[in-house]
Image 1 (spheres, helix red, strand yellow):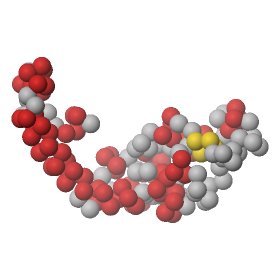
Image 2 (cartoon, one colour; image 1 turned 60 degrees about the horizontal axis):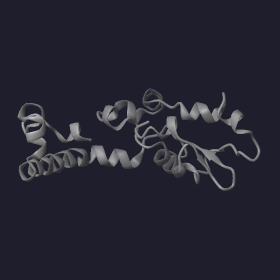
Image 3 (cartoon, one colour; image 1 turned 120 degrees about the horizontal axis):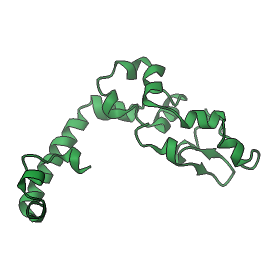
Image 4 (cartoon, one colour; image 1 turned 180 degrees about the horizontal axis):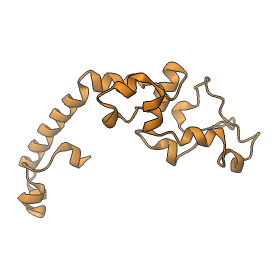
Length: 148
């Protein structure tokens, strides 16, 4: 998914709840395993929990018509699984916040503002230009996306 948490982190709640993201702990639609009841080696082995953690953009795309038809799927990557889970009960559903961000034009607005801010910064702080040279770091070649 877009943030990468599902493949790299795990949240362990005080009650023993194991879920891939702290934001998902309250998602009662999912039955997360409990470390007090099931050994971590079983939870982190071949299990339904790990199947959910292996979610890919392709699975989100295949799992719902909205993402499959969306022009922003390659930027959004399906959005936040926690957002989808909390809003619909299905972690493969579209993430409403990401849908609003991209289809509402916010992505383009952020790119424009970020590009202007970067250009203003480079004018006020020419050190990166002096250090790296105009060709590799000049205003004409650098973009906000490259800085992120």
